[in-house]
Image (tube, rainbow, N blue to C red; front, side, top):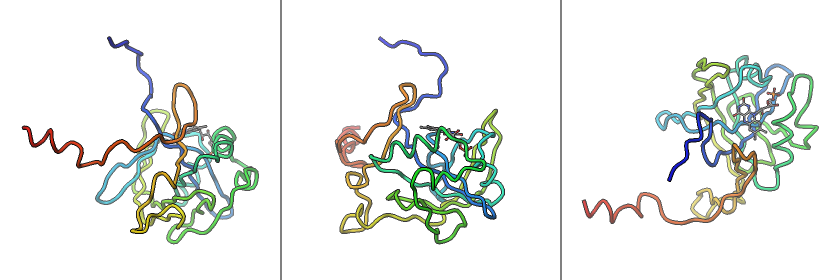
Length: 191
Ligand SMILES: Cc1cc2nc3c(=O)[nH]c(=O)nc-3n(C[C@H](O)[C@H](O)[C@H](O)COP(=O)(O)O)c2cc1C
């Protein structure tokens, strides 16, 4: 038996990356849960940013941003960056996070986040009070410590912090249950 919950922006779970941008001598950093892959070719990230966000101003001015995946243990820093607006505030310094230069874009990477994505803005679409920001991926970085011998990101080692909307909780990823593009093959073969 299903119960209707009305119209709500719920999707489970959500990532909770730190988005960084810079323009001139200003730097912005904020938490975004409404984010995902919008295209594979070219690889493009889409994120929903409320028009009032200070960092959006820097993203629009520079045309660039970075997506930084925090690991479990960084919940206080992530929460802080999501509850304090950065105009005139250095959130890197306040949260004890380290900005390091990216390879391609002007926005910094967050050193403490083990996986980082550099994006160049390719579109910003108005969606009510939000702006759907599309950023083409121009480089990715991973700490050596989260890579397998073959150079793939090991989710257990990365231990990314997740967000659960509605309950407003931070969670860790659970356990591997199957191999993708494989476990469904027996059903396909029965067709
Ligand atoms: C867990 C969490 C998720 C959030 N997700 C988003 C989001 O997807 N989009 C958004 O615009 N704001 C989101 N916020 C709110 C912003 O991070 C927050 O308003 C922040 O202070 C904006 O900083 P800025 O004004 O310095 O850019 C989120 C906050 C938290 C705590």
